[in-house]
Image 1 (cartoon, rainbow, N blue to C red):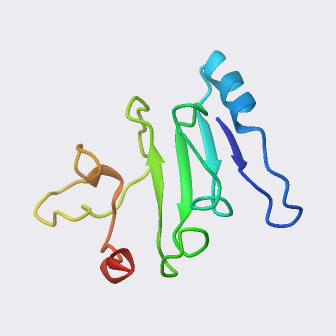
Image 2 (image 1 turned 90 degrees about the vertical axis):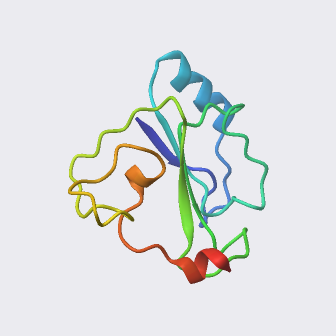
Length: 116
């Protein structure tokens, strides 16, 4: 996996996502991008940039409440958790569900933050 930030909050440097994404795609390497500084401010097209995983925060460029954010997972990317705990939103289950998006949503959601 190649993991990098889209833009540095220290220097302001913006990474060449398209070029890096093409290299990752050509070598079948998953590509993870942290867009905490750029989501909502800079155009980001996950398909055009070949991004497999994209993390974002809600309280910066998206102007949402603190404590919010998310993770985009490309539909064709198969992830297997190393460890899991709880059963997500469905307390009746004995294990984390197999279906999306619940498979990667653990614990109680920040409903108030998401509504904001």
